[in-house]
Length: 65
Image 1: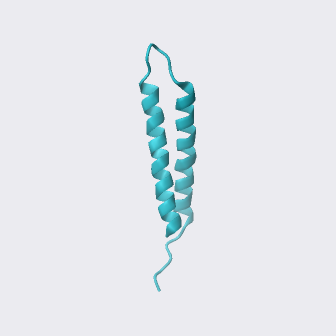
Image 2: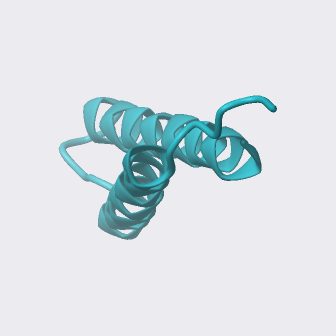
């Protein structure tokens, strides 16, 4: 149960990181992009997202009792 909750949290953090990377990509000024921030948010978002999905898929629900 705890692994599934951690998986959901990691997945949400991954989605948040990907959204923040997309926002940084869209909000550019004078045709300049903050490449470091975009890459950082994107890569960490992907890592968290796939780690969370892997935890959710890899754990089974234990029957009560």
